[in-house]
Length: 360
Ligand code: DP6
Image (tube, rainbow, N blue to C red):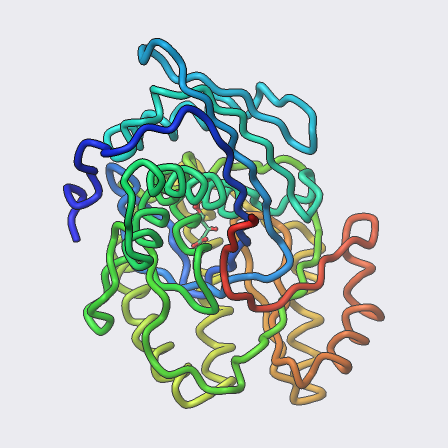
């Protein structure tokens, strides 16, 4: 598939107004996307677990307007008008206009809500942009008539990518790959694809408890962060390493080798932060409590033989990953030892999920 394949033929139908609702989850990368080229093309392939409970529900209501000269929309979060969200959506509309030319023909009302608190430091861009992209793709399906499910998902993921790169990995589950990788022939830089190979049952229902260490605004926006990889002294090696780590994970997923899984996932998280610490300008996004948690996880693993591990986003919060069979033991450990390091003792229990759903 190329970008051209996502430019539609003239629409055969007209619709005056309507509304679509989609629910779409967040995801957590195991091999990280960090660095991008023009048009939201990733500098390296990434793979993520789709989450189950951290999600956004978006209703997109649309009505035909007379002129097609500008984008016209209002955004609401939990029923409250949010003009602060408009610039990001305006940029998104500009990027997708040639692929969904109907966007200038309608006025949109975007009503959105998240299952996680907006100020939790959990990125809502993956779930939010994927939910919005799915609503738009649904409208287009109505204007075109028949669209097969595979193309529908690819197009929605393609549009979601143009909103926020990681959003293209939120549509399906339970593992999604985005970015070309030589061992995964269906992989693409343009959209996410469901991980196509065997996955050992040890990874079924994998748990992710998100420890909210710092709920403040992101210190480094993703745009600024990705740009730091341009002219970064270690960028090329890092991009190569992501390919190598994804190859290694293919074997890990097949064989269920949790020790190797832990090595790869923790190394990816620390590499992401190492890239930020060694860029110009440089940043430390971990907080003292992030390091306390990491050290306690390492001690607990050493002492109990647990297969618990951590990963990080571009922030201070810690995602604690563990197999379902360890729920009770790790749950106790989190409550007794780790929650003390969370801001206001807050954390979110989640697990692997299976992607977005249309709400009818
Ligand atoms: C650290 O998808 O938020 O979470 O494409 O600029 O919207 P934009 O970036 P974004 O970057 C996410 C980076 C990450 C790693 C990952 O999810 O792979």
